[in-house]
Structures are given as C-alpha cells and as structure tokens.
Image (spheres, rainbow, N blue to C red):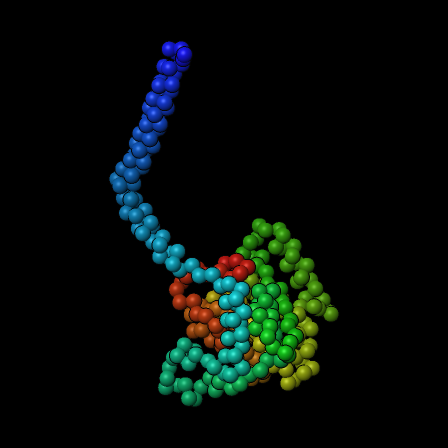
Length: 274
C-alpha cells in the first residue's frame, strides 16, 4: 500500500509543473505584448506588418534553374544564335530605325561559332551543356574572373591573387590580357588572342551565365577586338540569363531568359546568380 507521502507527491508534482508552465506562458505573453506596444508607439509596427506581408511575394520570386533547365536552355540559346533569331522588340524597340540598322541586319544572319570564350568556369559550364548533344565539340577558352581589389582593399588574399596574375600579364611573354570593371577584373588568355589573329575565319562566341548590366561582356569584347582587330561579323555575345539593362546597352545579343524584376532572386545549380 502506498504511503501518504507518495500519494501526495503524485498529485502535487503535476500541479506544480502546470503552474510553472502557466507562469512561463504568462511571462512570454507579457514580453510579446510589451514588444508590440513598443513597436506601435514608435510607429514601427506598420513596417513589421508590411515586411511580413511581403514574405509570400518574396518567396514566389525565387526561381531555381535546375541542371535539366540549364541543359535545355543552353541548347535553345544555341539554336537562337545559329539561326540569328534575335528579339527585335527588346534589342531594337524603335520600329522606324530597324530596317536601316546595320547591327540588326548582321545579327539576323546565321552564325555558327567555331570557338567559345567563357569569362569564367560558369560560362564554360553553359558552353559544355550547349554542345552536349553536338557531334562537333568546339574549343572552349576559359578566362579568370576575380573581384576588383579596389572594392576590397583590406582583403589581402584578393590583392595577393591579383598581383600574381597581373604580373604574368605584364611580362614579355604574357599569359593574359586584362579587362577591368568596377566590380571585376577579367583575365583573357593570350592563346585565344593568337588563335584569332592566325585564323581570320574563326567565329567567336562570348558566352556567360548571367549578365546584369552587361558591362563585363562589352569590355571583354572591346579588349579582344583591340588585341585582334576582329570584325564584328565574327563575334556574338550571349548569356543564359540577362537583366534588362544588358539588353538596353546592347551588351548582349542573345539570351535564354530575361530577368524581369529587380527583386527577382534566382539560383543556378552552383548557387545564387551574381
């Protein structure tokens, strides 16, 4: 038979736990209430409510490009380039000037690239996916893209990496030529430059994964043109995804997807678009 103390303990302990739990809930409720009261009096509650209301919309804007999307999109982009299938409405919005536009006439011609330059390994991944089902595998030259040291003056590793590559690009038998933007420094292999000089019939496709303003593509193109004197009819600029600014600047001729919103977040298989 249970002792009176055991019976009391069985009843008292649950009651005590319930009291403690209730007390904790009251404390939490009081803290939350105090925070809400503070936000309301300070005028910040509406900002919090506005932010919370946007969360579903923000989630809707997230778009992920899968490996399958990337492969299909890359091959679709190649077809556009080869057929000269440009987007007249976006590239040349002025209908009155379309007929006499020399660049438009040139871009609408069929173009079969014989060599590809990718500013970094991400563009090279697009190139490999682009020609995955093609019998003719094209040579792909890959550059180096790194953060401009001027944007991160306190980052010693970036400065050290830049100094090392920059030194090799200024030597007599240099390995690289440079194209510098505010955000990035692009190193273009001199093997590509020499090949284009020696083979006047080569057709170059400048290919990247994402072009926001298109500044990089345009400067890389200009650097290659200055070094090789390549004709415009022998080069095309393309990117898998572009922002409207890159189109307005005529920095990119062909693309697969247009990023229609400034707040649109999308991810490649290797991470967020940058």
